[in-house]
Structures are given as C-alpha cells and as structure tokens.
Image (tube, rainbow, N blue to C red; front, side):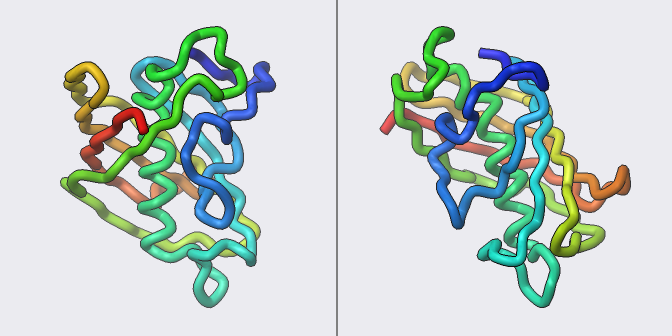
Length: 152
C-alpha cells in the first residue's frame, strides 16, 4: 500500500491510535521502507506542557510514524478503509534517542523514518527503524526504535 500527497486515504484507519493519543496529522508519503509524516501541535494535545510538545510526545510521534512502515503490510492492497485487520504495536527497545529542541504549540513538525531491519515470523514482525524529526528544517529528534507488531 502506498500513500502520497495525491491520495485521499484516511490513514488514521490504519493506526491503532485515536485522539488524544494520535500524534500524526498527515501522512505525506509512505512506501515499503520509508515514511514521512507531519503533526500540527495543538494546545489540547495530551503531551503539550507549558506550550511545548514534551519529550514523551516527540518519542510517541516518532513511534507512530515508524510503525506505519511495517503496519501497512498487514493490510490488503485494496483495503482503503483499514477494516481488514487490527494491529497492536509495541516499542520493544529505544536504542538511541537524542532530543535537541522542544517544538511549540501551533508548529508543524515533519517526521521521517527508514526501515533498518525486519524479521517476520508469520503473524508477528520485529523491526528496527531509524527516525528523524524536523521543525522548520531543523533537526529536533534523532532516534532508533525497535518494534514488535502483530495482529490483534
């Protein structure tokens, strides 16, 4: 399944997260090995503290963005509504995280991730993904996360 700027697929149907835990506003692009998302930081976001997105919020944004790379493979190509499967994903390890700056309410952050490794066992996938988050082209987060993703 591929999304691009031209597609009008409701990507939220493919993530298990819902408000107030959903930290992706827009999926800019995705393919089998990479993803690019955006998130507009709103005052009602549960991870906003003193007008800034917290460190926890930045890691959760990265995790939601990253998990979509592998998560998309659990859905059939013609399942544009995300109804064909329910997934559960866990961060199994935070191998590295560097946070350089906390973005403010109203700002839009861009998160880009690339699949490093993937091991499929049938209904379970173990993977490692490298991720970078930017605010106005300035790197604000660099991390490497491991995930365990499976069908619910």
